Image 1: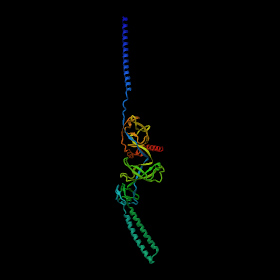
Image 2: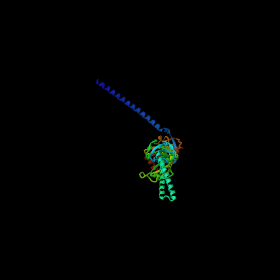
Image 3: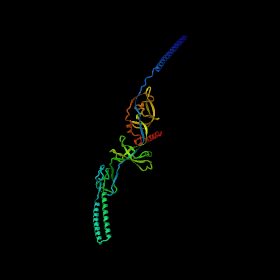
Image 4: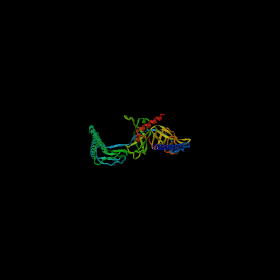
Length: 409
């Protein structure tokens, strides 16, 4: 019985082993077939020609030749050509206030009257005394003609007459000082004054700012800037906002520099100032100095900045078409529309403007020529970054250093 079971077990094991081997061989065959098919596909793909390169659509602009001068931006103070603080010379009670707060007065207009009744009464008394002194002098002279009087009596009478004349003149001056008049055409400042109010001597009433066809702008400059300018040079003013610009002419330089800051104060004259510009306003003054530096104007969108510096892509013609070539550049200044470049590109070169962010070295380009005929005009309306414009003061200093380095090359 046991001898019959053993052969059957061996036969079952043999069948299982053979089946397993066949399954393994089948799997290996399938994998080999798949591998062969993939290999053939790869070889076919490698043998096939590459797909056509797709160009990147960009806007290309031409770098324009320009020039640039170093500049310094400072804060200036607006001054009226004529300005006074209206004060009383004598004490008195206010009787009349013809001027209006915030109004305009002409030269010679009455601004304020103080009570002069006491002075008028004293004037009448002095005039009566003068008449008496005049009569005494005439009588003494008549007596002297007939040798009936003395010279000393005549001298005393004449002295009394002169004293009366001086007293009358003094009172008239006091009366005149109690009537305040406008010394020039001016805008009247605000004041708080009432009829019947008593004012002590030296009371400040208001401010008179002269009205003229020009305003003065006082500003201080660093020593290296002051050394490069002279009377007659023009400065650019930015009034209240970046959209309002004006040009003023330097008319005077201070006789000495500030002993602490070593800066020099200059005065510029602004003709026909805007109506909203008031005395004691502040303006940003841009002083151009030094020799012009050659530069190229390009769209600001063409400049890409990174840790290694600024670069642009130049669109260069090749046998395969228009391709991008990267250039490291030195950007002197830049605004929202244009950038001034002093190194890295030449005037007339085609620069990738809009779309430069998707361009890489050697990329095939499809260009659309940009119309930048107004680039120079737009650049003229933009100023360099500076502390006065809200930028980092160090950046303005770096810009000047770059310019000086480039100018020395």
